[in-house]
Amino acid sequence: MERLKNTLKEKGLKPTYQRLKVLEYLDKHENSHPTVEMIYEALARKIPTMSMTTVYNTLSAFLEKGLVAEVTITGTEVRYDFVSTPHHHFFCKKCGNIIDINIKCPIAEKKQTHGHKVEEVHGYFKGLCKDCLKSEKNKRIDDE
Amino acid sequence: MERLKNTLKEKGLKPTYQRLKVLEYLDKHENSHPTVEMIYEALARKIPTMSMTTVYNTLSAFLEKGLVAEVTITGTEVRYDFVSTPHHHFFCKKCGNIIDINIKCPIAEKKQTHGHKVEEVHGYFKGLCKDCLKSEKNKRIDDE
DNA sequence: TTTCGTGCAAAGCATTTGCAAGTAG
DNA sequence: CTACTTGCAAATGCTTTGCACGAAA
Image 1 (spheres, chains in turn purple, blue, cyan, green):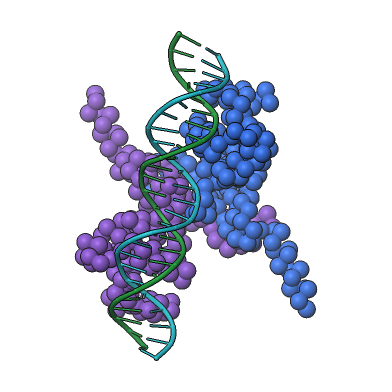
Image 2 (cartoon, rainbow over the protein chains, first blue to last red):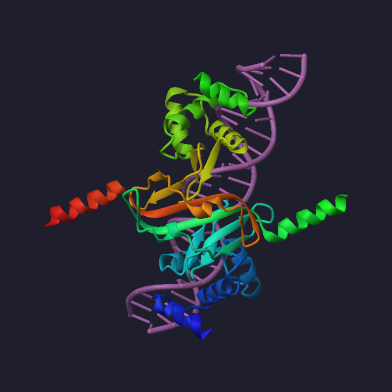
């Protein structure tokens, strides 16, 4: 808890109760890339006065300070990624999960391409995740 | 025109006047990755009865048939990419343009990663485009 | 006391839906 | 003829804004 409090202070954000709770949620669910709503739903259960507005405010403050990154793979919803180290994402078309992918890509090292100055490199895959692949296979076996 | 008409027929879409016009716009502005609004604004000038709904309908039909791809780099707007060959994108943080980038990436050839089945590979850069870089430099010279 | 954050209610907007009239084949 | 498409109007739902209250320094 103290660790997260310091994270906020370092970024010049007052460590309010709500901000700490949002950050704690992001920290605990680092791998689920939650939506605004997922965060709100989870926190509202514990903090009855929590409002959507506060989640929006908080996330946009975090975004500004570089604490989180927006992931817009699906095109219909924004998901939030607690920024640690740069990585790619995998979006499963079946279950909708977004999974972190850590692979080294020579292109990701580029500082320039076609004369443009590169500041960020983003990459993502779409397809079927490991688990959905497994259940697809089981289904096929069941059918036989 | 006949070419585009055939494109629609091949995909099983009735080549209506509106669809042809949207497709023609996409074909002509292949490199500008327009938003729904940009397409609507341009076409409404020539076709007074054109409606937003029709642009939405048309694009979603195109998307379903794989004629276009959605580009969601900015997070606040969806842009449409007339599908030709797979390529990456460069988003300029200053002017907001989205530029096609053709580079070979070894990762893009992957059919599988970490046990997940890869069907699509997407990559994009963010930074300053060639032109904005140039005007930044000129500005600095002007200041001196 | 002064500044900043919270959270309710209302506003704003892009997108979707319902549906009547029109059109392609 | 028959099914599909168009496009207006209304509804929907996510996100932002205005603002009063409250907390922190």
